[in-house]
Image 1 (cartoon, rainbow, N blue to C red):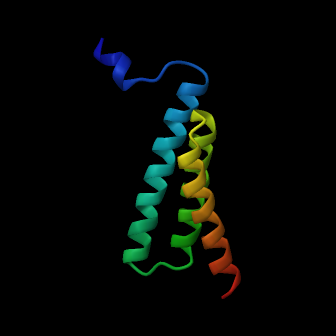
Image 2: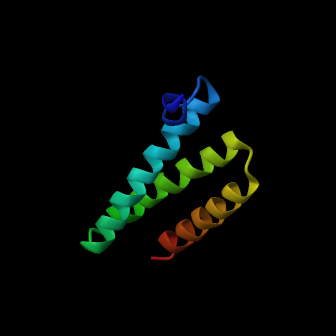
Length: 83
């Protein structure tokens, strides 16, 4: 049924669905903030988005998603602390 494709199930799948879409929207807003030069707000938005996608990786038990977002988080924190 088409609605099953669009809507997640219950529990962990539903949580992952909402977190991934929320994190994606926040990262898009972060890109917009970067384009308009809204610093440091862009970095804060990216931090939330990266953390959200890391959570999705944990929920899906997807090590590749966890790794890339953990590295991105570490790089962002290192860059922010060096300023």
